[in-house]
Length: 575
Image 1: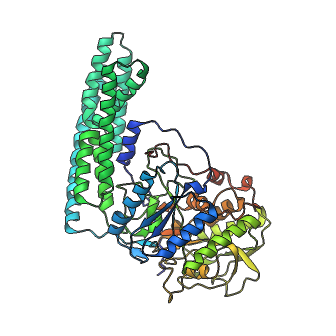
Image 2: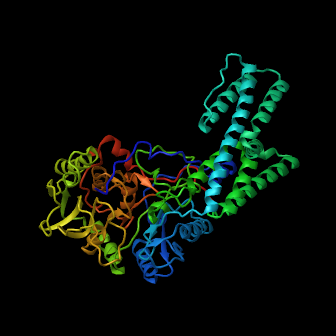
Image 3: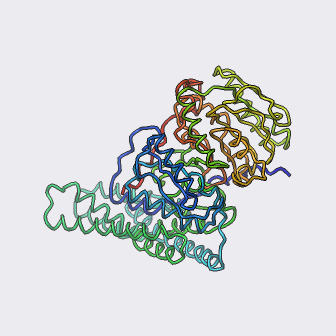
């Protein structure tokens, strides 16, 4: 049986509760949107493993070549292996990276994390203990109760709304999203009624009653925040009592955030999870508490929770998100921008079978970036014939490769080699140098058809092609292409499913424009985060910067949107 399996509808979309710390930050400050800019050296954080000193040397070499600012190398204390446990990731990676960003005030700068040679490739699946299973059962019960309690409060608010407007019709949706919408609708009716009153005392009475009804839903934090904002409007005329009140409220909110920050980095600890639940229920109300319960349930599910470390690392600032399978990539060009999400980091590793491979990648990328990348575009289609010629998913992907060939032929002057046969191109069959390669399908059977130019970019779509870089008795495509001189590639650390790969007719046309760095091209087109695909290369590399191979206007209209720089969300935490 082919290791590829079609995706099932609904698998890619899961409700992801807001990270509580981001919500609390919004209570403290209004953050301006980040300035428009492309990925720059100042946006990088380099990650190395203490137990593999060659990685630190390479990170220093790269920082010097790319003018990465000083103090941008964070050291992890991990075993010198290609896979770490789920617990090691939670305890030895997440807190260290977060703490480094916070201590160095980099939250509004760093948008791309760069693991180096020696940092593990993979995070193993979570292994739940009997106590974890008991916790999941209890969380489900608590979620049912919290949702029921929230609905009871919403009904009271709706009753009040109907009192002031007999035409108001209460809702029936008892889901969390439905209850939130019902509450907003009822409060809207009440608010409009209050604004129509001419008597200030009547207005205050209506609003006070509504606020008391709603308080179990939203907790004390939003009320404190509203008061802080009210006071801030008249800061120049504060009385001593108002100044003291503002300072007291802000101190409470800051203490709340401090407690959450300290607990969230210990999310793998059951005791910390319990304390977070109690804190959120008390301060943020039933709705955020129920969302937190949903997130914790998803976090504790162990099925298919393994991932490429880099793909997981993209969500290093997130907390209780589902770890089963994947998260739709919020940086994807088709994904709607959502400022209620925590920051998503681009990731791209500088790695290879040997330490010297990384130095070659850096030098080859710089050479091609300065002089222009020269060589053929090689497209090896026909993979559907080798797997299942009648399967529409495979036929569709073959069409993606043919689309890429058509784009190269009609929109660029690059020399093209297109093969549509069942088997991959034979060894050493492509004469002259290859600048761009994309093909499929030859499972764990690398065939060296091309001679790669310095700075060449390419990937081969097949399962299990990056389960290892250093094991010598394997013939995987990522390892083989790196050994043969390719400067940028990507692959899967486990069965990823076909639609986990960047579509070739999106990835390469974006690269051809020279407008985006390699990391931006990858993260604009890779569909999933927290999953099993990762990329290798210089994240700042722009092979067609000197001589663009394709005009941006020639991109499809939807794909032109991908040229907009990836920005941190407006709610990104600023320490």
